[in-house]
Length: 116
Image (cartoon, rainbow, N blue to C red; front, side):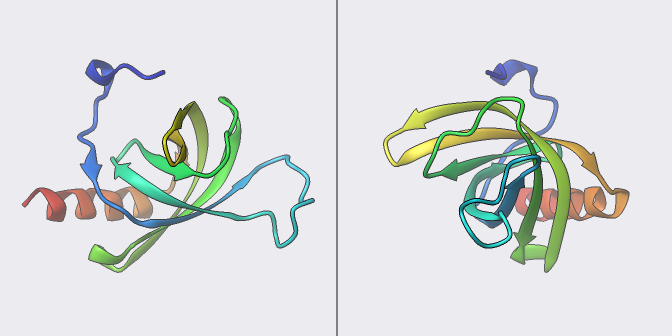
C-alpha cells in the first residue's frame, strides 16, 4: 500500500463518477466490460475509488473520469496499486500511468479550483 508520506500530489476529497475497464479481462459480465465506480479522492497522480468488489493489484485499467466542476472528461490508462476491504465494499488506489497532457491540465485546473 502506498505510504501517505510518500505522496507527491495533494489529494482532494471529491466524489465523481468513474467508468473503468480492466484491460485483458474477458467481457463475460455483459456490456462493453466497463464498470461504475465513485471517487473518494483525486490527485494529479491518481485516485481512490470505491468499488463493490475486490480488484487485484497490478491490474491495468482504461479509466474515464467526469469532473463536473471544470466540465471535463478525463481518460487515462491506470494501474491498481492497492485494494482493501471497507465497510461498504472495497477501496482501491489507482495510479495514472498514461495521461495525455490535455487531461493532466484539466486535472491541474480542477485541483486548483478545489483548493481556492
